[in-house]
Amino acid sequence: MSRYDHGGDVFGTARRSGVDPEKLLDFSASINPLGISAAVRSALLAAVDRLVHYPEPFAAPLREILASCHGVAPEQILPANGSTELIYLLPRYVRGKRALIVAPAFSEYAKALTVAGWEVRYHLLSPDDGFCLVLDALQESIEQGCDLLFLCNPGNPTGRLYSREEMLAVARICRAAGVFLVLDEAFMDFCGEEASLVPELAASGNGVVLRSLTKFHAIPGLRLGYAVASAAVCERLAELRGPWSVNALAQAAGAAAVGDIAYRDATREFVAAERQNLRQQLSEICGLLPFSGAANYLLVKLDAGRSVNDLCDKLLVRYGIIVRDCSSFVGLEGGYFRVAVRTSQENRLLVKSLRELLPGRQ
Picture 1 (cartoon, rainbow, N blue to C red):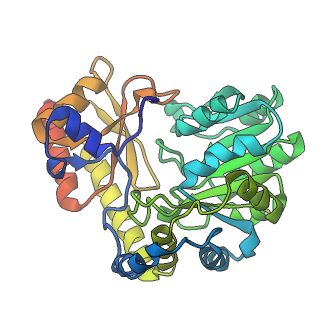
Picture 2 (picture 1 turned 45 degrees about the vertical axis):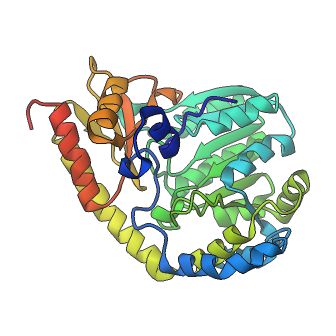
Picture 3 (picture 1 turned 60 degrees about the vertical axis):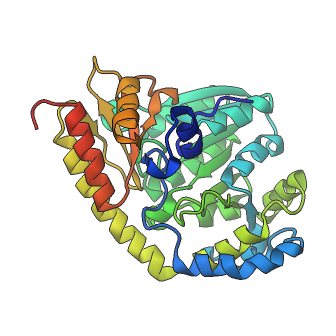
């Protein structure tokens, strides 16, 4: 079994450390701090009796709801067992064997490409300028040889949100070079739709937008994501995968989640305020530099000479707090960790623990 190098492994961490998982405070997984909404809970309970039947084979009702939400045709939506399922399908769909990943980035991009036999290169963004996307430099990397480009907006783990204009420019560069663009918008719901490229890539035929429902709606245990692309792209991806990928509970939860506008608005307001407060408090701790972020997590740089691994271990052992050591991300091999934005009380506990572990000028 391959090594697990993601956040959110609460049960594995508890098992290895001999701690009750209910006593751990998980800042490593970037999940909505408001938890599962009342609408989703009700939909899940109502759907239990349907488990005696097979689910809709291609999640047709959910496709229609998502299509209406994005202003596209149902044929341009493909629900999946988490967006990671789509990440592993796409290298089998796209013709070519040369991939470029804008990094730091989600590690499953490279794993999926490697399993499918692709050559993987990285276009590294710099922490020195806040992970700015320099279009001329990206175009140069693409022109060195590329059939498929993976790009995440907002960036994970950086939290950097690129503008719609920047993404349109990337799409134009890819189209001119004959490159298939995979734009991962897994955390876009936390930011609003202003920077999303769903309308353009749904109509283009040479790209796809990946979205996740599990993070914003706090249902990672259900696994639910979807692709937005041309009807031809969605049809071919569906053929590669087969039916019944999305179970009945996930379909019911997704249908209820998308229509819960009050929950959406409350989440965005709450997360924005708590993210700002958390970043301010982290910036006042000696040895920490939190980057600006647009989603529900913050990337933090630790002073040179200090060990991120040691800090993460101490947070776990002394306080029962899990944060995401970012050493496994290409481009962040040392000195960075990521924290989710949680509730006010939980964020204060994190800050208090870090202050005790990193004494100095406050």
